[in-house]
Image (cartoon, rainbow, N blue to C red):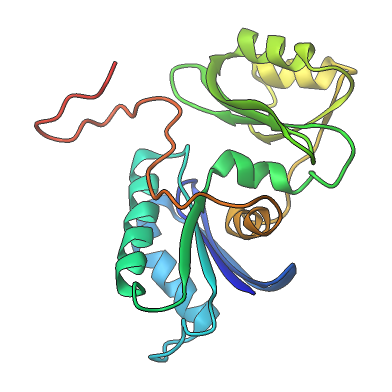
Length: 224
């Protein structure tokens, strides 16, 4: 089963192709403002430019957030465009969250994996799961509440994600005997594809913001 993973939700965008659990190709770029063009360049480099280049793909997995508002919109707009384009083909389209993707690198280990992503307004997105089950659903919390969540989970945890080592969270992690900090070396797109193989994916192509975005569409009011 060939799966194509695509991520533009985070600053480091990526595209990856796997066959089952075997990695075929993985490409990344660090250019947030050029996600919309760079993602197509990466797709061309990964699949070529032929008319039938997508014919061997069984599933396309897109990240749905949390992340930058614009990045999420780009990723899900692509997902919806491909779903429409492939409606008469046997290509499935689905999503996983960036938090789920970030957790995947360490889920084979026996300890729970606690993901922390920096968010705005001095808060963090968090998520925690073990190989067997989800322990904490995604939340948007200040540092002191994140630390409480970590301390409430029994045993030693692996902590991964994106946070400032000099922040309150960073200082806690460096000084705590309860946590082991690890940084993923694989792309989010690759992890998203592998997560889908091992744990499934959503058929919904709706964004996962956790927190309501600051940007407001014209003429619409965001829910409180």
